[in-house]
Image (cartoon, rainbow over all chains, first blue to last red; front, side, top):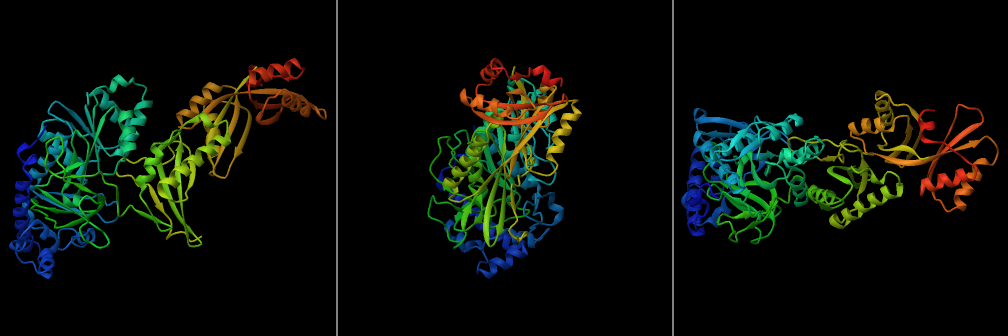
Length: 437
Length: 143
């Protein structure tokens, strides 16, 4: 199923031609309308889109970083007069001051098209009833999915986040067929569903899990699919680039199709800032090709992934990105070893008797880093035997060691004692600069 | 002859034991015997209560990891060597003692030892046949 078949299945050569035309226009547009880009492009010797001869010439355009966007807070990157702006969003500010996104009427129209493509690729049709359990408000996730789903014609329930009992009640009573949530919240609802006292048939209509706004490992996906009885598809986006709709999985779930006519992706090496070899992992960089309110050139997402230009069985020609492997931000460097929380999550989700929720505590003592992994003991079967519990702890420790190449201290904690997150999960507590023991 | 004991997983953090026993008090549950074994990070609280089912329901409702286990209660008179005779007997009969803890009864000169052994039902029968006092569950719950 396609939402805009002619674009989504466009021949690669035509798509590239369209991207080049739009990229040139975008360079001109930014140079003329955004003082920040006028200066940046000028410094790089680019004063006209005509200087971009091929798509690979994009490398001459300077990067835009999150700090650049923050420095322009709130409206420094505006390309149109405020009266043409019809909506303002802001990022959740996971890592500091929020970043602002502004939208013209046309931007909103395009955005909902991109989201409509993502949810259609996920299998949603006008027959579906979708509960949006993202927090409504400044966050682009909820309203982004909301308008995209309405565009497809699905029935939308703006449940917002929180009040989990009521969330389950709506899932049962409104005949909900799909849930939009963060993976961690979906996992939590899955746990509650089991304890809700209703038979699984009460939730029988539920089949789509449209999850996004944070990473989700394969193991976690399996756990969510099992507990909620859904088919999970991942989608990707961020406020800096518009919101959700940048990319999403099709029914074959072999990577997230980019809306390449609107978002031009590149992969770079974060250290050298040079493009990586085709198919290699690196930091995703995206240029918006249609955005008018707040265009962004070569935005460094800090997300680590790789691009796959092989054609997909679904018929879409647009490039696929792998599920995000981690964020350069999230990456912890412990005793010189790079650690992504997602690696730890995969180990825990695949281990019996412990829960999938975790907290990582990083400490420094005598100039030595240490990593503590707190995980919930969810099964009571080992309570008669201390040695059994110790063995479980060793098992988790050994698995982590083989995956991370790092010694960790595994602590078993009580079930539900670790925080549950309704928005983006914050699972890392880095005390290295705070406590000097 | 076996008694149901609750085992509760608890983290080693201040006030946790108080919170858990408060849950029991709120559920109108009386504690008959109690023991905590711990490592540096976590402990296992073992309790015998008058209403095991109510206790387990209350603890589960509070999200605790809790299990029910069968243990036996052996009566020991206050005479030198009685206790060692009981454990010697168990050892000679090939029962492994996994853990144990004692409490004193209201009757003078009598103590009780809660024992978790392999094959508890058979151990209890063997002890009783050999003249040791084995407390029935009801007697412990209503003590």
